[in-house]
Amino acid sequence: MRDNIFWRLYQIIVIFCALFILYSNSSQLALDFLGFGEKQWEAFIILSFLIIFAEASYTPAREGDFITVSYPFVLASLIRLGLPITIWVLWLVAFLAPIVSKRANPLVALTESSLKTVSLYPVNLVYKSMGGPAENVYLRLACLLVCGVAYYISDRIIVSLEVALKDGRLFKKNFWKSKWEESYMPYLLFLLGAMLMGAGYSTPFELPLFLLTSFFLVLAVLFVRYAEWNRVNTRGVLEAFTEVAEGRWMGMVGHGRRVGMLMDEITKIMDLPYEQRERLIYCAILHDIGIVDVPYDILNYPTPEGEESEEFKRHAIRSAEIVAVLPTLDVVADCVRYHHKHPDGSGYPEGDVEEVPYCAYLVGACCDFDEMTCYKSYRERIAPAEAIRIMEEGAGRLYDARAVELLKKAAKRLGRVR
Image (cartoon, rainbow, N blue to C red):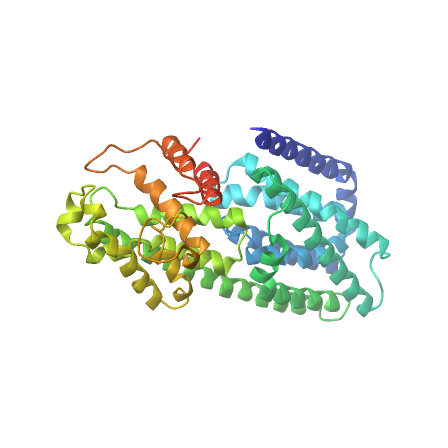
């Protein structure tokens, strides 16, 4: 409750700060537009297009999305046209694009656009401290680079503060490191494109160079976006595959997909690097795929005795064998193998507790929570809040205490627990 109050207060402060910055620069906005020459209009139109394209193709669910790395250098280029124009363009696009293209909640869109506006203000201070636009092309490139880095740092600080208030802690573990690991290649691509823009700003080839740079930037965006779409499609295929297997297991269709959603939220809370998150989500989706080898009479009308039988318990080992065959997932096969192993040594399969990776406790907590909240032939479904209470009572013995806490936060984010 207290964390929620602090977050709302922070949200209000950021929105009011952004509106004040916009208002204080509104009188200069028209004068700057009226003073535009042909070169300035060329730069304004193309840079504004890049921002619109970035916002329209941005995927909020993907933390550290590669598209965010275009902002430091596109905005550093745009700010040369004046702070009033830059902040108004950024605020309007960041506010309207999610509403129009994704039907986003207006309050969420307003908060995000305000955060970006406030993040941009320190760049203007850096820009002014460097003396504004320079005549020498190398000084212009240096100014562009410094402003871009200033925006990136400013944005990371504000976003980390936002995350800290949402999650009730000051800084997330490995926050800066994970963001860099996720986006360094596109970051360098956009840096190169922005430097070309900056270098060509006062040459005889302004328009062709702007157009050519914009084309390659958009092409880079599309290539990386297609790679992300393939990842999304991979997740969808795995979810469909598990649902086919779960169709044999009465009352459990969609179990793997829901466990994957919980793991997705947990990895976001832990702020793991994206590649590691992806592996854990996939292994969470596939954690019970081994039920394809469990006799149908055990699954069709499950009983407590049937789910305690050796034939049923073998599904954990079989699931791990299937996951180990898949490229890049072999390193997390033990998370699947030991997801029914408990911190006190009970559970299955046989093995020392020291062999159990921590991710197995995460998968196991998500699995048991979803299973308890599903209908079984031998019992009614348990209310989500009651399931969390049962797991908290078993923390330290049947469940890892930290895993239960992470699960509780993830379930709240997904609306499964109030």
